[in-house]
Length: 230
Image 1: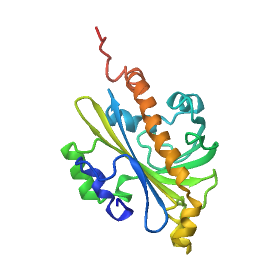
Image 2 (image 1 turned 90 degrees about the horizontal axis):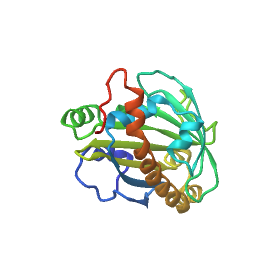
Image 3 (image 1 turned 180 degrees about the horizontal axis):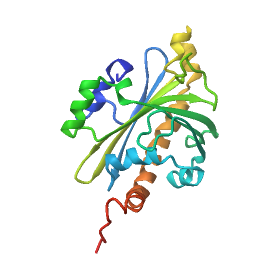
Image 4 (image 1 turned 60 degrees about the vertical axis):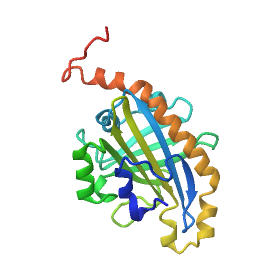
């Protein structure tokens, strides 16, 4: 199992036991893994997309089936997605529309700092967008403001054909700390959630790979003059 205790394995490009699918962890929470080949994309493009902070129109461009609305809060620096909070309404495939909040944090909160730096230096990782997730637009938080509920980790690697994206989600992660039993945690995060999120994640980044390269080139044309494709 890939648990919060060994997330560093996501930094190694070697195929994992679970690259696409879901599993119930011992504490009752859910782990969902989705692998998406984002042809023509790079890790720089992917991290820029989250720094760009799409409004509702662009959020619908991203996933025209499931995405419904998008606003942002938190620390909105143009240089990093870390500290920002994405407030969204979206469907998870066949599940009803849900209010969600994603609080983006630094990679070092989830990974060993030295292991992460080494993976970036070697080119084994070219992007990492990670965060805490909560159900509702006012999810429970710790006293210092950390969102409680789940975790998401998007870890990508540049290849000759594009970006190999690993997306891993952990739903119900914080419930055991409240004293909930594994059965109670499992009831709160049913298997249908895993099924819906798995399909949603794969579709989401497949859709994004179709528009991201062109948007990145257009938005950076003053810094990186584009080259005509003929």
